[in-house]
Amino acid sequence: MEGKYIKEEIAERNDEALFIDGIDGDKEAFNDALIGYGERCALGPIAIYDTNRVISILEEKYDMTLEEANEWFDYNILGAYVGENTPLFVNDLREW
Image (cartoon, rainbow, N blue to C red; front, side):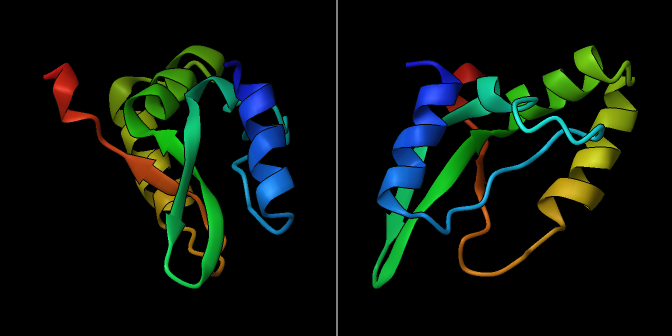
């Protein structure tokens, strides 16, 4: 399923779910890194992103080095807790 449709599915399940936007405000920038949703007791579903794919998008779309992309991700994305609907970022160890 494409990221756009995953986003729509999550929004249907939780209309307050939050998603990450691109540096330039592009609301679709990280759709390819969106892998699904997660649920927690007594809270609505939240978006789940593949950390490695987010970093790859930062490198490719925004012409960052790996070091710059990691730093941007850590500070501006992972470090941006905005409440219980904040997305979750997964490090898929199966790729190692």
